Image (tube, rainbow, N blue to C red; front, side, top):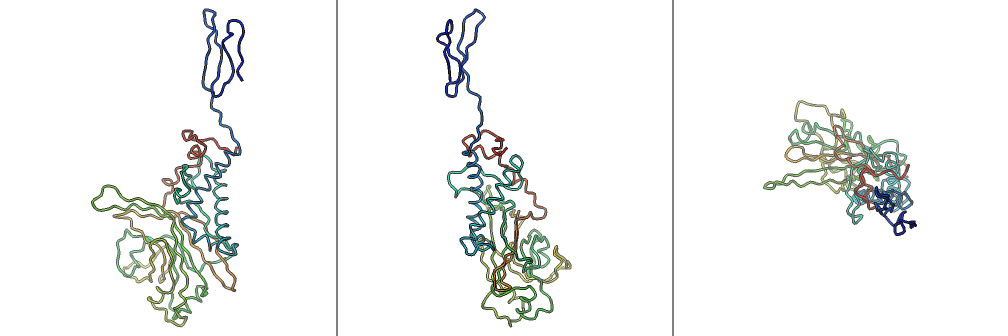
Length: 348
């Protein structure tokens, strides 16, 4: 509130009017002057601010859900149907990001926090430590999952050393004469499924153009047992390659290894295996998987069980170029003050 002065300052006021601060200054000659200055900015925290923080988190999860809905509908053991599984998938990840936002407001390296966009469809699909599956299955149906830069040593056809494999491997040994033997060894039932999920960034150089095509996003492979391949079928390379029916939103490689170099070791130690996953080039084009995971869905006693999984960093992958925006550097855009960086935490 502003108040007027009497005497020699009758027409002068002091106090606050809107965003302006009025004061009266005495000059050297004894007269008075009106001084007007801008009100100091005071960031007030309210439920509205906290709601904006929740909307920022929701924008991130929107990108996750848009890409991985086919995974979210099956990956939560607690979900009795697709809808409830998807709800649990969303709720778990909302909680995961919200907890990170509170704990690491100024320096999070776990997620990339988004600038506010006009539509929920505009939020990019980012990497980070997302929860992908949840359940009580204590083992996986595959022998190994991870990153293998020895891809060129075991692919059936020789390829460049600049190709890398990311995904799952199933051991194959001499005792596996039939498909039944392979399934029993890996504790796979006919209803079972394995899934590989990853975040990838690509820089594709187009001939004749100075500007590469850059993209990033979340991808998945769902591999279900082929119902038309009999248990009694021999475990040949062709039959093993056809053992799983693949559903994916990216490219998928399915290969039975055939050694053609003197190098007979890979990061997993397997000598003979079936591989299902993503092969990336890192020479003419730069394709890199940053976060990934794999999980299993099994019915060993007729009841659905899911193995728990969350994204992990790939070996030799540096997340810092992609995790450069903690909450404090994005939140101003969500409350109409994008120039305030870093924005003070509303949770303190």
